[in-house]
Image: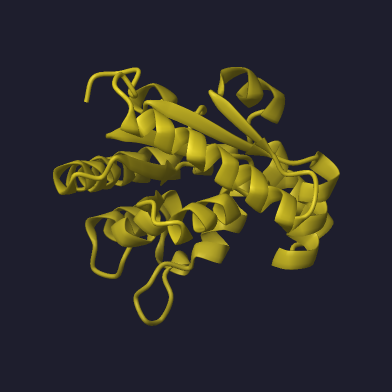
Length: 209
């Protein structure tokens, strides 16, 4: 099975690519889905977050107030590091288990959407890395317009991530999202065809399964 890590900085369009590939029949798991699982009400992950950050980040129904916690960690690098240290091991265990399930099912190709792929060194754990990029001004506009964030908050989130240019140097494939949605769809599906070709051939993986 060819394992693909899909990444990109905030508002780059990586989730759109993930949705396109999922609609095309590819198994895809996102870090956001896994983060919600490991911080579900009554979970070990949520208990650890509560202990580390306090009850103020827990909703009345017992769920995590993700928006409030997000505001904190993007203002406070030490808080962000503490949260990542708590959750990343739990998320990675879930991701590995999900990949193992896809392998047992005989899937030729499986994709994990991992926003912090290069930051946490998970690119080496997958056969192929795919980076979705978009111009900085477009990403900022999307965050303000589509997500309703203030400009300074959006900028703070963007600045907290690794320089996209450094990621371009490390990625196996790059999808440029600098045009229309139709352009992105065409590029994403063209690359998917290439990945499926690699997955179906001998020696498709660069690492042993």
